[in-house]
Length: 309
Image (tube, rainbow, N blue to C red):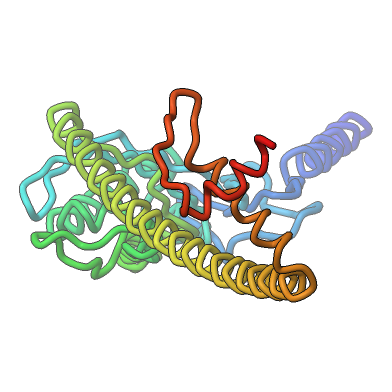
């Protein structure tokens, strides 16, 4: 009897130990879990961190992350609507929104990456195929005025732009992920570039465009230069004319004053004035090799004759 009781106690102790060992599980922060029984989910997902109970030895726990995870697609060369290949590298952020649906439809995160490959890559390819190259490489808020340029005759205005197309990729892809228990948080174009065969043509076009802009700037500069020089020339003429006018006025006043002084002097001593004017005439008329032939009744002879006495 004692042996039977001892065995029963041992069984009870082992059962309790097994219950404690396998009947409880701890859910860490940033994780969520689904309890399964013989592989089938039981109840709703466990999302609160802490100690939780399950039926020991019969039920298992599948753990999943609640944190946002990264999806990186394989860089692809995709043709645009205008038959030009563009190199795209797209990335996305996602998380498991419903662990129960995720377990039933996806099962693990590796397969989730594959499903996202199919959903996002196909959406990216479809939208790139439907839009021209300019829509992919230029941002939605691009405008020719922002770069000081004008549209060329063969260039269409931006309808969507890279940002709006990225948003469209997100909107379409996010509608397909809830059935897998996945929430698509964000989609971004990590890299957008031309393929090698197109790059040279694009660079040539960029160089040509910059040369055209430079020529326009030089032409505008020459126009402004001519305008400034013309303004300077007009101002110089105005200043010169004003100076000449003031000089003529000053000279006129000086001549008038000189005439007044001469007249005043002449009226005081006419003989001296005549003598002075005759000397000035001699100075202007007689040089080093000059010979004078004058008559005795000439006014010039009068003073020359008196100088010889």
